[in-house]
Image (tube, rainbow, N blue to C red; front, top):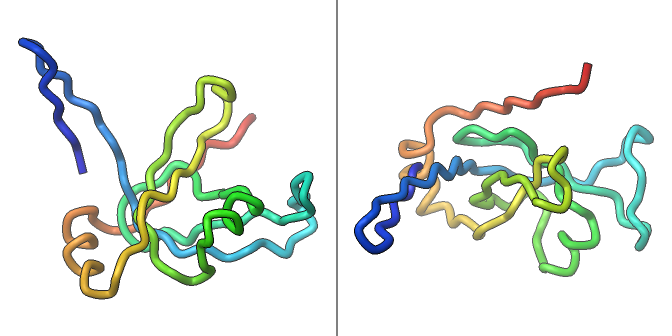
Length: 116
């Protein structure tokens, strides 16, 4: 999904790659809990392309998000943490919206780059 914005006489095209995902809290010892003792959540991509799906455990709880519920998400790079891909949960998705979003976003694809 690509959004286009017109600002004054210039047209700026901003590519926002969105995806659908459902999240589960990790139980693996490969991850560590945050300062509030909450383990992170990892999203399973259902549709669209993602470059990362890890979500902070404390934020997941504070925002009242639910495991196994579908969410429309995107990835971005935070200026304070330029080496990390951040996952942003935009909105919950109802079952009535799933088919249309799957058609628009395409097949599920997770493209994670790992350090060498």
